[in-house]
Length: 184
Image (cartoon, rainbow, N blue to C red; front, side, top):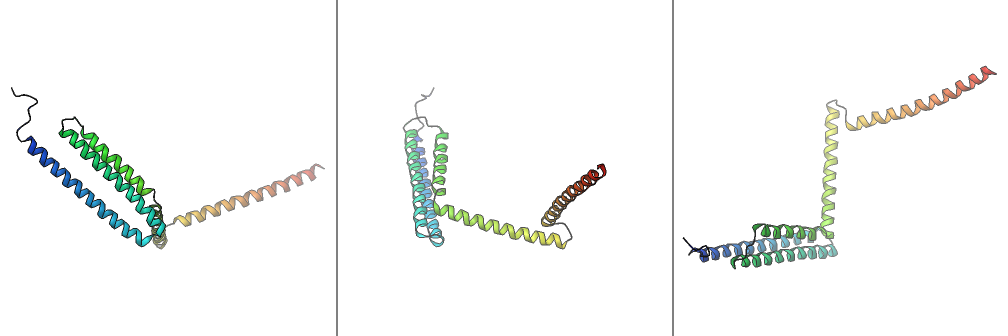
C-alpha cells in the first residue's frame, strides 16, 4: 500500500507548469487592464473636462489597485496551496468576485462615469422618443388610434364630466329656487 503523504514523481513538474500558466494568465490580465485604462483615458479625454478627467483617472487607478491587491492575494493563496495548506476553490472565486465589485464601485463613483452615464441615458431617451414618434406616425397612417389620440379622448371626457357637473349644480340651484317659490 502506498504512503498517502507521498506525492507522485511528476507533482513538482505539474506544480511548476501550473504556476507558469497562472503567472501568464495574471500577466495577460494585467496587460488587458492596462490597455483598458489607456483606452478609457483616451475616450474620457475626448469627452470630459480636466477635473472630470482627473477624477476618472483616480477612480480607475483605485480600481487598478484593487485588481493588483487581488492578484497578490491570489499568488499568496496559491503559494499557501503549494506549501500544503488546504485552500478551497471558492476562496479564489471570492477574491475575484469581491475585487470586481470593489473595482466597479471605484469606477462608478467618479464624476466622469456619472457624466458619461448621463449622456448615454440622454441619448437613449432621445432615441426612444424618436422611435415613439415614428411608431405613432405609422399607427396614425394605418388608421389606428395612437397613445396621444387616446389621451386626447380621455382629456375631453374629463372636461365633459366637469362641465356636466357644473350644469347639474346650476340646474339643482334653479330647481331649488323654483320649489322655494312654489312653496311660498
